[in-house]
Image 1 (cartoon, rainbow over the protein chains, first blue to last red):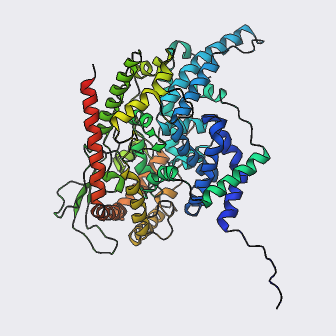
Image 2 (image 1 turned 135 degrees about the horizontal axis):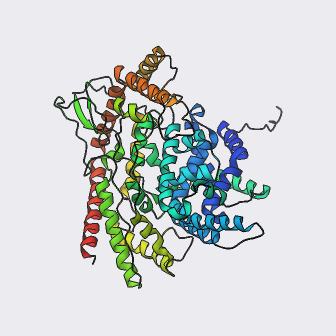
Image 3 (image 1 turned 90 degrees about the vertical axis):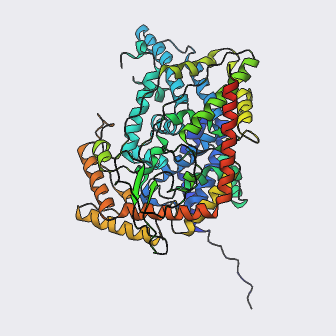
Length: 185
Length: 391
């Protein structure tokens, strides 16, 4: 009797699939998390995102949305678990926006820059005040450049709702921005 | 440059992971998966899965998330690593245990803003019809609704927490302006023809926020205020006076959800999955759902629309110039969809199935539900006391 030849055991389909998802999307998901929570937490939250995706992969219906949007949705839920950290980060971003940088542009441009920074503080305050699902939507749109379809998948809402909610968010942000500095909008 | 463009321009830059870190990260994921980690995140997702109809009619259900009133609740819901999903907002004042009525309905038919829906001849999972009942959407359909925290409860508890925070901040020498109440907005669960003719698949407009929020938000510009309120450990989930307030209001340890919720939610997920209503797939659906979907799809086909379920409909793009207004094409589709849902009995069959399952689940979990209600009542009592004690 011949000794049994070692054979390569095929990886379960879910393992193959999760690796494919990982290779394709890990950079996007990591950047998304890091932008919102900082790099210290980004490793863990990114790992949790893909671990959760691993668990839920059998239930993911490909035809109902985009993979990347689905992963953003999982990450968004995990990020909400760290709201306090995110709030700190938004505050820090607002403070940084007040710091002077290179003023090698025209005076007119500098004025615009300063005005923009002043407004940004209020905008970031508005972002911090948004309900969690609105903040997810806004930052997926503004920071991650997600399409409406991806956002719809991530947040499990119709595409039309993404648009209408984004408009409502615009209104909320506008209400937090002093009118005298945003009047040129 | 508008506000969103300004925000986009301020996007923090982040370098990609290097190859070694990527490999380590992937190994971590596999290790975590193999070790069945971890309870904290299991809590996070189970609440979503308790709402198994999401993928079938998401546009009918996500309304619970839209209230600006929830912005206050949302800021409070994360504590100790637990996301308290207040998923089911209805007009109901207090949590109640569902008791299917045995008498015929006396209510009128569905209306655009009503949270009541008449369901007749509800099919059960075994195909045996139950008596006609009237139920209030949001109470009877989902297990989570049985233990839901009403908007009024959330507002009361929010005020209680703010009162406790104010007391704590005063003890540290700060004058704290409590967070103002947001408006309570309740949108209909079922968006019928009247609603759809106005908003399509979108939302009805919500009231805008007011200046009181700005006052609340901007007060942490005071030196030391932020640390006093939130603590000084950037990695802690909660700290400072916020932590003190949570512990004062939420028994036993400041976690903003009953410890029974985990057990409850997991049981609900299992119950629905066992009855052919899975959260994330339409494979092997409950026979009643399968039949309802089939009829709905056939009805839509007669209107020239091909789709297997309402969630699979392709909603026409909205013009970029006016994305907040439903264009005629979207409204037309939404009305066709509604017509088929109504004329084929999809609404009755689908929500009736859910109601039946939920009622059966409620009976089997009565002790657990009572325990959660007891916790909610205790929280409300603590909040009331805190508000009364506030100067």
